[in-house]
Image (cartoon, rainbow, N blue to C red; front, side):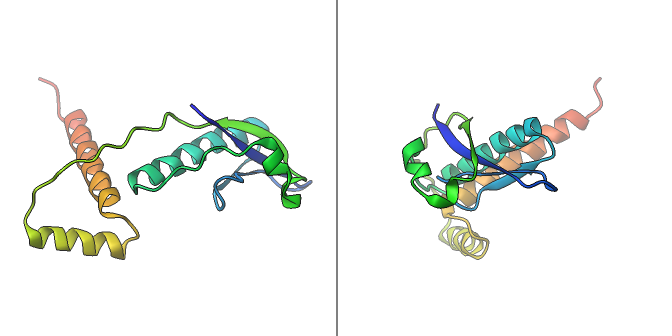
Length: 140
């Protein structure tokens, strides 16, 4: 499991902000330092999961020297955040009607997903919904 550098920023009248130099745009915050640490771990895991679902590459962690070489990073306090175990992606063959594939691709494109990301997301939702239905059934 890799550790990524997160930068904590704190203004006098603000929460603790957290950013990830290896993942521009991934930011979070917490009222306390512990909350910021928890939120950072969740944000990183959520982002990496999205990259995996979309079939995108996960960048290797930068070194401290690389991060601090950017003057914009020098006012942040460094914290290491462990990445959740990155699941191995596996290529599969799926057979489906051509018109269904065209609808899936159109929906995925219109909603910012790759085909794989959309199919994974749809399957996970179906499983989650089934699990919720099972949990709501009265026991006999």
